[in-house]
Image (cartoon, rainbow, N blue to C red; front, top):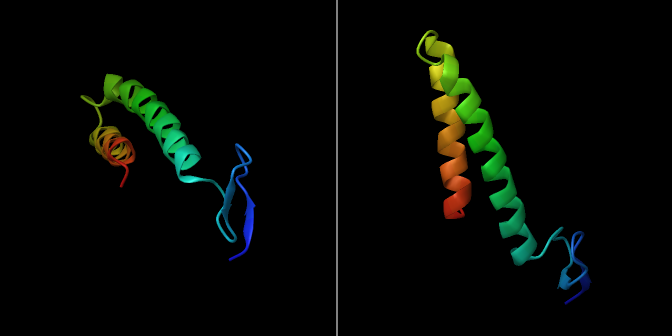
Length: 70
């Protein structure tokens, strides 16, 4: 099996992968936090616009999935 380095931490990983599992989990966690921040901002005006409400719900759903690791 050929190996390469993780793009974030430099650990050896299988060829064809970009980041190791630890870095992938960390990246997903960071993305989830950013999506939660965006959802909070959208929820401010969600009561007045159905499209914004749906967008906030979609972003919240994505953030929850990232936190669960799916």
